[in-house]
Length: 133
Image 1 (spheres, rainbow, N blue to C red):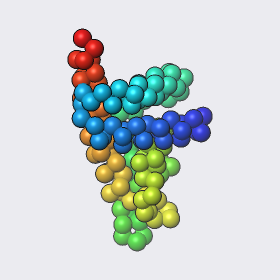
Image 2: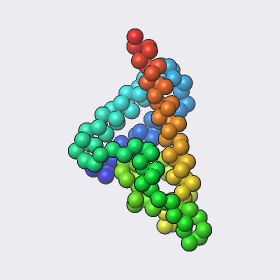
Image 3: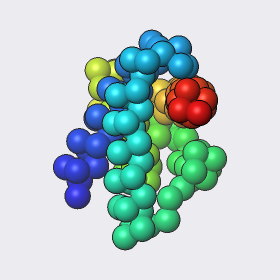
């Protein structure tokens, strides 16, 4: 299951990054939207058989920001509920961090960027529906 989640979130991350360079309505977005639709379908099936899905606001409230002994604010990675932890890890590949934990600013940046990406994805889906009419 963990490998499936890692793979799914890696594919989602690559698709979202690719989609971010396209304007809603661009025909090149069709294949990417299909990939993201498949991921959402897989996620619905997984969530049906596991824990209830936490939205971004619930996750933001659930993950505490702590002060590290170095004076830097961090988040306890283990306390980030899945699939959000894996989403954050995939989005953070290559980022610097403390050995003990990721920086809180990176967590907050990820959450803000996720909202922007979901708005952009929604705009693409609206444009796709308009084209299908």
